[in-house]
Length: 323
Figure 1 (tube, rainbow, N blue to C red):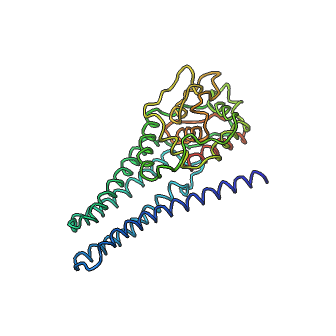
Figure 2 (cartoon, rainbow, N blue to C red):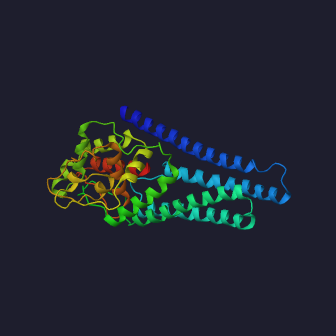
Figure 3 (cartoon, helix red, strand yellow):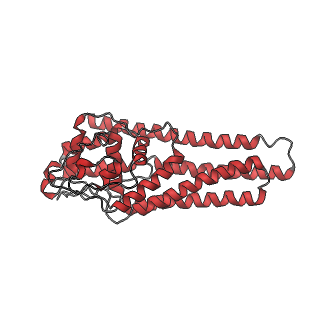
């Protein structure tokens, strides 16, 4: 019962966050429409036509960004069975959507570009859309492969480091998107609420010989880190990651210092503890798990039992869902 209550609370938090995203997007569009409206009094018919077209486009523009907000707040329906390539397709969809809207805005500017106040605002939006488009394109390159984001079975599995170039693409792409869709004070890369035993999440980064440590109680610590913070916190942790992360071949997870380095941490015998203070943050751990889940080849270890496999798959899906 306690577990169901906790899951319900996590769901309610996600719904509240989704509502905030939509309200913020709506407010942005209302401000733009108000700016346009300030120019509409006593204007000539051609300008009225232009403003009318902009308002109509604005409605479609709002729909696009509400849809984008839905996608980044977990309504994609990500499950443990979701393929990494499906995540790539999701980013490609964002890229194509932004491209379509940018094209519509550019066409109106070509036809009615003489109204400077509106022109400036539209050009600003085109610039922001372009950043999201390029970010999504870059991120899509990192999420590839037919492996499932979870993929663990009752036979158990060793951890596998995510492909470094894939992680770099995801980090670069997500950084570009986050710079547009999050407010400056939204999300905390250093957010952390759970106890010091989060260091034991490192036991999910072991080889086949050590997979007995990747058991339910240690997976629960990873799930606790993921559940303790918001999607915005995870995005900030990814944003703060190095674009040239180091994979410590001798020290593995113990030297990983940010989300990207957690994602690419190689499996090293007897290295199974998160030790770097910069990495012992719930947001960073969750961001690393999300990146490892999305990026080519990345896996977490799981003991050879069904409950451990289900637990680790659920933790990965939960982290990716928050991105």
